[in-house]
Length: 130
Image (cartoon, rainbow, N blue to C red):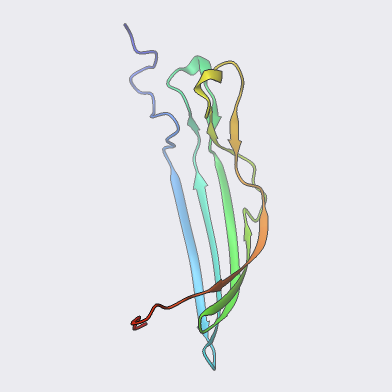
């Protein structure tokens, strides 16, 4: 039996390039207040989800960015965020159902732009020295 892929084939679903970076800043203010901001981004290169070129389904090859900004005081914080800020489109995975492989094109899309707010309260246990 022969393997259906040439020896130089890449591992399915594994892009040759993935790059990510983030920058964050925290500005302490008076009375235990602080302001924070963060921007992050990543690029996921293209990949094929199979070894066989005749059933090639490409995923990846997208870049996305996220932005966060918030304030905190003591144990409380509130942060606004935008994930996938430029509403980039792309496929992150394919064929979660092996019974449909080759019969239908199934893709898991990148999450669309998402805007939201997070409110957080940190609880300390007894004896916590933080």
